[in-house]
Length: 429
Image (cartoon, rainbow, N blue to C red; front, side):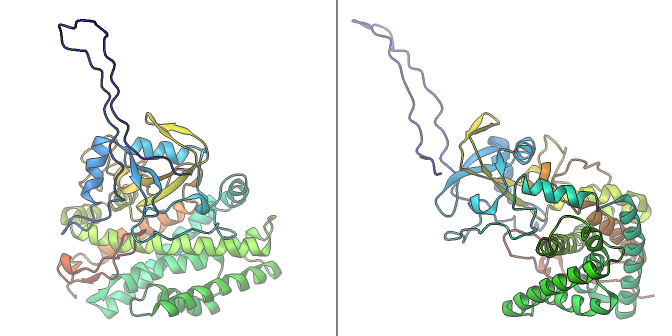
């Protein structure tokens, strides 16, 4: 449903008088601002970690603002922390893809299809509740403890390999990308004999030299591996998440869909956080020194880096009915774009928000989302980052960028912020 976006005109009332001798009293109302022309997407030059500057201006002036979408729909943009949380927590806003208008430039003719089977991000209750209830019980403390030990081992193995290959490597291909991929193998129970094939297809997804056709082929191959894995776990369960789920009411199609969803949700995001987080810490040497000196800062450092970088920076919800938020009436059918990167830099919630401070207690940061759609695998992501950052900085005390910061190639896709590669170096022993 698209509302009329015309600006209301000021109303006036005149005090009647047959022979007025004083100026007529006029009551006026402030005109509603014109809708924004579109979502601000241009980051400040030379500031690879900062959101578009216009977002801060909008947040200070009006944290919930009318915005015109590329397809002509007039919806909303939320930039304030409290507004973002309110929208994310309210069940009257839907996460169904097919109800959304997309805010990103170049999507004028794009209509999103419904979420595929197993994709928890794009569905609402009661279907979402069913999946979530089944899956939440599988991310147990015991499993996270086991994955923590396995992550430490995988991290050490890759640091050893980097040291043998160094002293100059691309952190993305040597460290940031393989670690989450191997942890997904551990979580889903991919047999060791299949992991080389799994890794080969995963690597193709992030290789900038690979054609788009080959990337689609790699993604299709990974989906097929998951489908084969579900059938194998049905026949012979092992100690892993997919095997546990074979005892649930999920069908084979649903199990395969959940496996693919976990792969997609847990691979690119964590890989980008490890790479971009390292870039940020190396660009703030005092922060790198603090984490080297105090490895116990890892928990706080992860939360602060998630807040400061907000790599998955923008979400969308669709109003299922009329909802009032922050004094504004959002009509049924209108889309609300939630700028998580602006919310995570809101000074009303995080003092001095544009400063990276690994000692900050950034609890409540919204990078994992909020409400019923808060990231299901957030504890696994934390396990990976808590192990990766301190180990990397401790192993290589002289770690630094191998190129000037302005030469680090940034990703250009609209939904995920990160780096394409991160050349690093250190002083060889």
